[in-house]
Amino acid sequence: MTLDLDPETDLSFTRTLAVPRKLVWECWTTPEHIPHFFIPAPHKVTAVDIDLRVGGRFNTTFDVEGNVMDNKGVYLDVVDGEKLVFTDAYTEGWKPAPEPFMTAILLLADAPGGGTTYTAIARHRNPDTRKAHESMGFYDGWGTVVTQLETYARGLMR
Image (cartoon, rainbow, N blue to C red; front, side):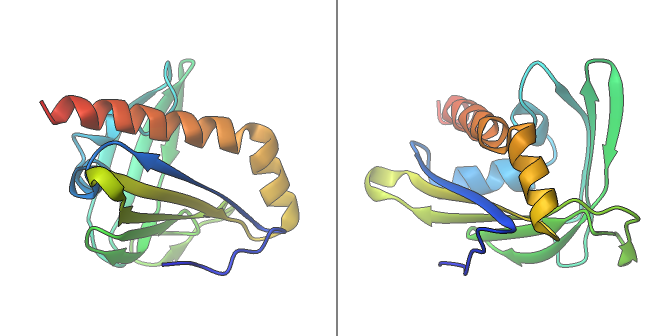
């Protein structure tokens, strides 16, 4: 599956992970797995609340250097084992967020050798928000998250 990316507002990368797609999907959709990879260490996920359906919540709470950060969002699209789309533009019940930041799209496909082709896309409302996200470290941060995900998921394969 490919999406029409706009270089003015979208950031993306694709990596091949040495873990099966089914396991990557499980990690992304099961609350007890999220704290093990979802934010670059040493920061921590301290709470996760998932209602995995279109319009369902994807809420997380982070501890970043002692600061509590609540992130509330909803799923816009869920294709079992293949695609997750979630945004902070709305909270559960389609309540608009006062200052939305982005919409995340995760695409998963089988890779040769039993791995997963993992594509992460961050869509932003405007070029300034995209640029700010890139300057904040999108590639390093999201790259770290996927590395942590792969390491964690490999540990589950034992």
